[in-house]
Image (cartoon, rainbow, N blue to C red; front, side, top):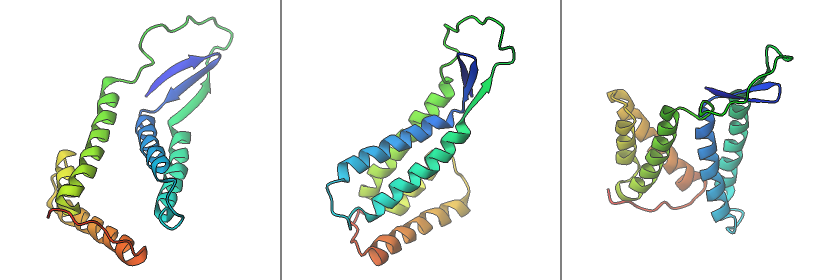
Length: 160
């Protein structure tokens, strides 16, 4: 958590806000690229966009806290160092998450959902066999039933 002063307030920001901003960036970019499609084609992206927006507002409310300074009449010096910047670990985590999401999306087109999900789980450090068996299969079944059966949209076929 890092904080900075603004007037007589101390503003503390949780590092998870960077991941939220990254997800919002991907969401807005995707939505802006697909806004010219028909209403039926945008049914799922609009639902997903609204869900990410609402959950993001909840995360944003918990990530930023504004508190008054303890001694409001004392004179404080301005902070001119880099103490308000996020620690390198947070920046590395945010960039690593963006790279993992990008690789996951690119490997789905080549390998299909199950192998690429297993690869993503391995990269993120999951080593339990139960998770390797349940998460990729349940994700593949969810995607199949949601798109093929409910929305009646045919999915592209991958290499595997």
